[in-house]
Amino acid sequence: MVGVETVGCVAVGLDRLGCVLMCYAFSVLPSLQMPTILRVDGYRLFFYSNERAEPPHVHVAAGSAIAKYWLADGALAAARGFPPHELAVIARIIRCHRGLLEERWHEYFGR
Image 1 (cartoon, one colour):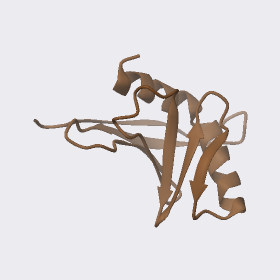
Image 2 (image 1 turned 90 degrees about the vertical axis):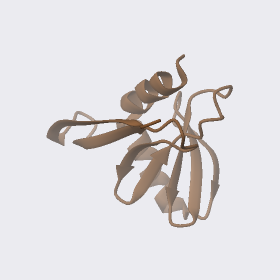
Image 3 (image 1 turned 30 degrees about the vertical axis):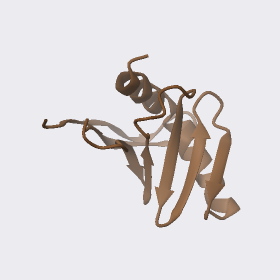
């Protein structure tokens, strides 16, 4: 089965939180276990397709480091390999793109 990919772009600039608005790509590839939702500054934000039963969250990877953040409040759930200052940067990215991430979660998991 061939996956579906949509690419969108929002205006480049700063929003009211000082977050940079940018182009994003969203791919739903049913045969993959980790659909990538967003790539920002070298971080890959993705879901594991078998985690439907958990509350909405996103995993973030860069190199061998990985972290998990809850989307409801942006809280860090777990991390390995990221220094504290990078976790703060990632938390800001999650806050800036929370709406998109939640939308994609519900779209992907159908709830």
